[in-house]
Length: 139
Image: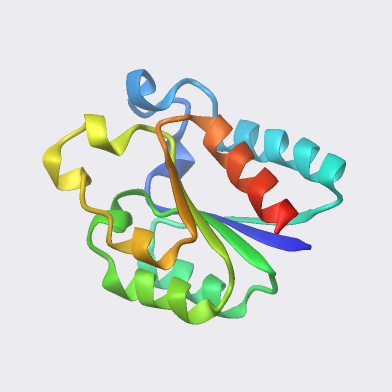
């Protein structure tokens, strides 16, 4: 199984951006953690991060994969076009958020991309990505 792991806007700044919300580990730390688990599961991962909505959509449409783990960042709250791309991919999708979006500002409580996902994991930090990987490797 090949899983595409997409991270959206501002996730390249993990480790230094609002550590009280997102922690002190970096995107490279996350990728290393997931790579280790993927080897145990016999799964191949491809990592991509972009601050640009269109680039994320291009990867959804062109990157070879059987499933997608996505943290769309703030795009989750308003990007219908990203939701359409995820839905149109025909692949199982798990949406992940490092912070618990429901403990944050009210405008973050609405997630339009969530409707395109089999499930959403929010507030578990990097463990949310691990849970998404374990789930997708089983289905």
